[in-house]
Length: 160
Length: 182
Image 1 (cartoon, chains in turn yellow, red):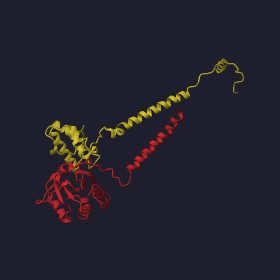
Image 2 (tube, rainbow over the protein chains, first blue to last red):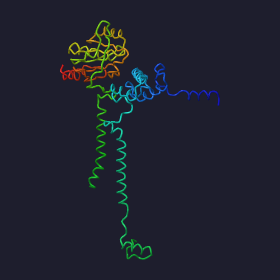
Image 3 (cartoon, chains in turn purple, blue):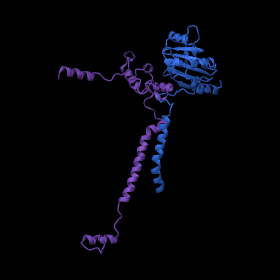
Image 4 (spheres, rainbow over the protein chains, first blue to last red):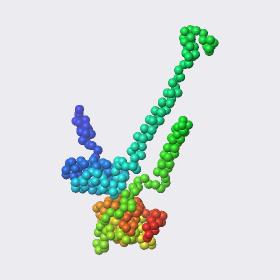
């Protein structure tokens, strides 16, 4: 491998996707900072709306990152930080909608539709196989068949 | 029973399609902006607030100002272009309609806000200065301009995101104010 290959490889390995977090924002305690990062990824930036505050460069996202870190540093649980934000901005600020009666169709709808489709398919197949399955031969038919197989004439029942 | 099942097999997909079409039609209705975030604070008490004024010699904006009368709180900043656009509408609301209008100067320097109002005129009864934006975040502000209607008991009753137009004031804000007994 040439030096250039090495350099390219190193570049690819060392440059991960960069978050929007500025060095000055980070908490000193790596464990708390890791929690803050994980939590930020679940909070929607209300300015860009399809980005988390972890990824967003928006001013408001930065403010929310700082508020989130202040609360974590003050000993708040993740759920407490989330509820603080939800009280102000509503469930929309969570990128993952919470499971509650209003979001049941969202969470369980697809599974329910799949279950319904499977039930319907199973019923349909059961009915169809019942239709396809031939009724058993009657005694006269059985006798005719035996005669035909034995090479008999079949009393004019032949088609030709 | 069989006929009922047959009918259901035929009608159910059609019915779900119709529901889906209705849902999409609602979502695509003209004038609906999907990026608007409804306020989580509607019909809830306005978060406590206590801010100094942007003027060194005037009283600031605190929760007590929201008690006992219906008020309109407008979030603005001198750097916000749409705020400039809605300014005449706010001036009309305060001066002609006599609505108590309180300003929340968000993420702005007081001197910049003073210059902005010296140029355009100051329709606000009082203006709280929130350079760090924390008070605004408490209220669920996510951009400027935003306008809140607060009832006499200090509850947020309506929130408008974006610049207020004359039409917004006539068709929405004033009827709400009337309904709240102003």
